[in-house]
Length: 168
Image (cartoon, rainbow, N blue to C red):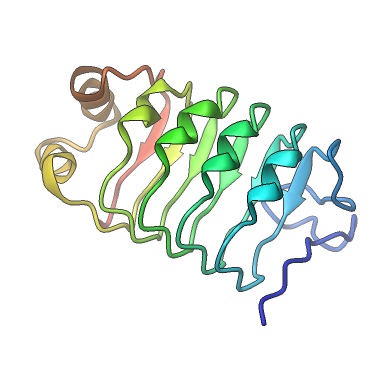
C-alpha cells in the first residue's frame, strides 16, 4: 500500500531540497512527495496549475502521466532516484521548467521535446543511456558538446549552465 501524502510540516523538512508544502490545493506552489514508495502519479496532478516546485525524489515512479504538461508554472522538478524508463514527449509543455533532476533512474534516452525547454540545470547522471545519445556522451560529455548535440540533433534550445551525465 503506497502512501501518497505530501510532507506537510513547515519546520521539520527544512533540510530538504525543495521547500515545504502545505495541504494540496490548486494554488499550492511547492509539493514534496519524496520517500513515499509511490509507483505512479495520478493524472489529477494537472489540477495543481500553480505548482512551481515538485519533489518526487526517491519513490518507485516508472513514468509520468501525459497530463504533466499542464503544470505550466513548474520551475523545478526533482524526480531523482525513481524507476523512470522514459519521459513523455509532453514534457515540452512545462514551459517554465528551469531545473530538471532525473538522475538515478532507468532512462535510456531523452525525448526530442526536451530541447524545447529553457532548462538552466539538467541532472541526469546514473541512467542507462543508449544509442546516439550515449555515443555523443562518450565523445565529449562537456556542457558545450551536449548542448551542441541537442541543438543539432534535436533542434533544441537548452540555454546553458549545468548538465550532469557522469557515471553512466
